[in-house]
Length: 332
Image 1 (cartoon, rainbow, N blue to C red):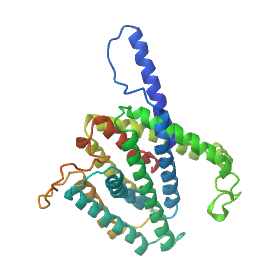
Image 2 (cartoon, rainbow, N blue to C red; image 1 turned 90 degrees about the horizontal axis):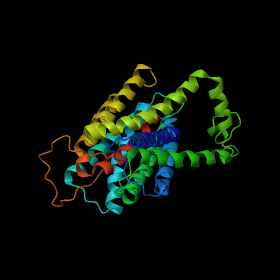
Image 3 (spheres, rainbow, N blue to C red; image 1 turned 90 degrees about the vertical axis):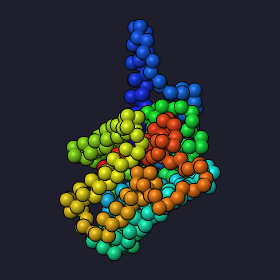
Image 4 (cartoon, one colour; image 1 turned 60 degrees about the horizontal axis):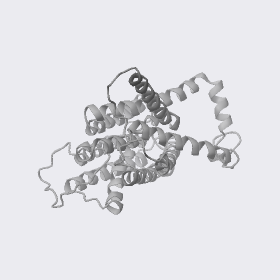
């Protein structure tokens, strides 16, 4: 995941070098590369949050369904809103609170369906519940990431490709260093590798080298993440961040449909209801569904969230969208 993100920084630097070359040949076209007078260390804390949250989500994914994994990630809206109120002194309109309420109800229905209708022969209801809770904890950490970015990074006019790339650099570096002690830390049956250690990177590289399908999957994942960020920027810039949110919801539906077609899980009507409620809550929160019966709060300042391009400047919206979108990519 972080290699894919870091590739965005490489593309950004090649892009800058290309335009400098064209300008040296007399091209007077101006291109906005954003602010270059900033410290890359700004992205250290967000990268650490991203690394921790993503790791937890993949641990949780081992104990629950892929569709539930994707749906439960919608909880980031709830935690981002609450943390924004607590630490950024944001005010949330009643309409947004109603959207958050629907998101919570949808998440609860998805979690209940996993437990009540569990068909997993490997893990029982308790294990699936544990996986769902781990994914929710990861959303809290990612919400912290969004709040940290808004407080310390946003407003500095940093190009989104550059921001994503620096996060990828720090995440790749930190995780690469951590793989060394993980190679020696015993983890028993939890490890899933022959040596019984927390993470056997050498064995992983050996498997990739010996299995063409596995190697193709890793390369595809890296390319997917890189292109996901690039196309996400394009959609947000040319259309809107709200449009990207709608497309992201379609991704959840596709993952769920593929899981059913591949028979990785059974159809659960309660999960359908939960997904629809979750989708409606997200749409209400992002002002896609009118709610005339709910009056706006008297507080004029609404919550600035990572999806609403109308309430934030373009650079802030693009940067927020990239962080929420990074998972993407990794889900597939």
